[in-house]
Length: 463
Image (cartoon, rainbow, N blue to C red; front, side):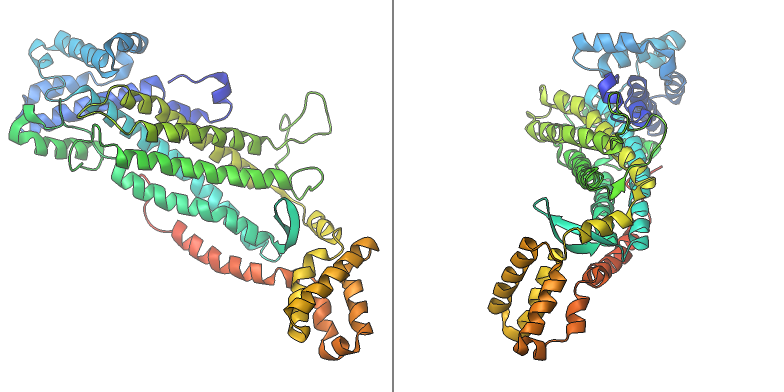
């Protein structure tokens, strides 16, 4: 698979290689060799024929571009590939050539080849996903009590814990890993059914051949051929798409916190990284940019998978081919987003002093809700809310800290002064008091997330 220059800079060389033309065709040849070996073991074809077929299972011996060009007229990548394999086997042993691709069909070859490539892609995704999630949880632990502004509707809301924020970023990644593991366990299965999915050519040997072929390739044994029943396959693709969406959320938050006016986080610096051709002062969040660009392309691919599930009868016309064309891009974009955010988080610069200055710049207004709840214990919620509306308005109009205005008002009101603990009231304006609950919630969630990451197995635990 070739990608444009604009695709390639949004992803990684490793994932491109997984779906490279030669890699996918090699996976298809692996299927042919495994099928021949399984059939030989079950007495469907001679053992000698399987040995000859196996000798010609290296894609390096074939003209890949010629196969690709021929596939456009044939309507299937498998047809010219099997034709080339048959010729190579026939040049070696004419009798063995009659047993190439015995009882199989083009979709068996292509689907299984894509399953094998997808398994390799999932291994890359899992490695990066695990690393990113673990790094976020480590940062969450380090910054469990670091105060930072929480923002709602793009406005400062309250003080929270930076560790709480990091934990929230890690949680969907941990869940994604679990869901990918489950979906892969169901979707990474052999495709082998023959012309209409009935294994008719192999007769009563068919089920045994399926089991042996699946075992050699390290794939799950399907209940039946899934030529046009794509539900488990599409579910796997959709789980990848959801992961890309979670990475887009992480990149969005990070980039907002990295804005020059906010400057709470910054991507790692380095020569040639995040610069501008016109403005030497800029430090652009290029990892976030890459992740957002990659994640922004995924929904259309996921929609294409769903749109093409209505495949006709025992073999679809055009919809299967459309699905195949979208599938690699889904993984290529997601791995690109993953690696970009992994790089950003691995070397993230955290400015805790700036976080505190951003809190202080709001003159204590972010503590208004906590103060209102405390006052409600003495004068009731409606009156406390009304009073705090008045006091926050005064603090803004007079450009004074809210804490100062509140303490002053309480001291002037004998009823309030006698019923409130001023030290406790003053403590509500301490950012570490304000973020204590968030820190404890994060601590508890971190424990369960780490436990989930340490569960045995991965999305691609097959050999």
